[in-house]
Image 1 (cartoon, rainbow, N blue to C red):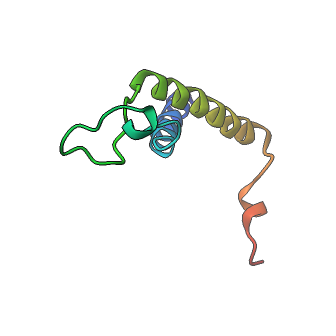
Image 2 (cartoon, one colour; image 1 turned 90 degrees about the vertical axis):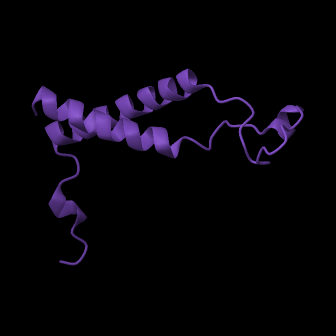
Length: 86
């Protein structure tokens, strides 16, 4: 597999993981014991740490991309293994 292909796959996995991880580890102002700002939604996050979120997404995406490349190299699961109808 070419390096450009691995980078493209990593970027796609990174974006998907970053999006899927958004609701995890977020606390609302009410849970943090802070006052709500007038007009603020009750479900709005108290403080969103973008660096920490992106670092977590980076690590998870690297692991998933590594598994994908290893599967590509060693052929653990092939397309014929996923054909459940024949």
